[in-house]
Image (tube, rainbow, N blue to C red):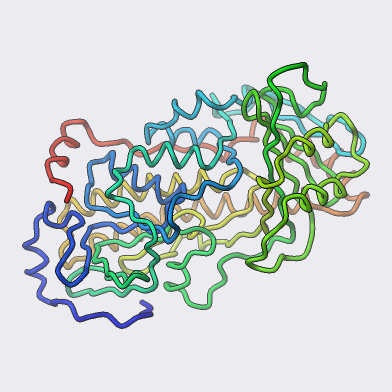
Length: 458
């Protein structure tokens, strides 16, 4: 375990720790500026807040969610959620609130850019494993809904984790924050995204992500409520559009009656880390990339109605996990993009993080209920979570990478073969959504939850 800062000695008498009741452990402030909790979650993103919400709904009150920023990130565009993501949102109790605000996807259309030709089109009802569901939702709306479940006193902003160490004698991890505070916990979960600080501390020198060779520009266009819309393919309700070119792709989906999400991916060298983009320049970049594409895709109308300040560009990359997970050590593990960044070609990055959260929440509850005191119950639960998730994440990451490789081919003769010969073999409706199968772990009964809630918040 990496030690970044010097820590004050802690008692090595396990009886001292054992005698504390769960009520006494519930985020109390010690006289030496040390917080105590059972589960410390680092990162107020979709994965981290999903874990906090799951623990809250399961009745585990001894957790704390810390974020280095001063508030939840309001920026970002939209996240595409397929069937498995909605199963997670249902389990967390926020699905209905989000469904009311966003349009449901009903069909998938794949076409070519310059020719304006439809290569294939099929309904979600034709895909095995249904009924299926798809919507794009704004990232900020997702966080707001999830944070409604988590009590405000369980979330601390302006709290950056700068180091941690494990005390095996007492069965705790001691994390240090940039403000000088320390937090003693039985489990530390890094859910702080692709550039995870927890990952850097846990595995110094390991690459956070491997560049896949292409960039993505994303935005949300505003659609007027009044007047008739142009007869473009991209404005049709319920249609998930994928438009292919040579080394460039366009994707669109009408999120609401007044908004349309779009993205463009294109082959390019990796961008300099930390570089800020100008939204107007990004829009012009998209115009140049899609110059000459068929007017039926409505590209000019989309870009003219996209606010420049809301356009983002990201470098696409992933990290292939081991089939058995192993992305943690001792009482520390990782969640979501911090553990396994993946390319967006399956639309599974956000969903995988929520799946992680539900699986880990169930295992943590079971481990903590056994009274993990100086034992290996919690570490065993974390390794079990990594092993269970490792198999599925490896499958998703590799499948998404292969799709991206095929769809970003830059050579016109090869794309002709891809579009006319490979497409019928790879994009079969029956197996198109086979990767979206996921059953959320069950919640405890109301009686069990009521008993656990008797411990007061402090």
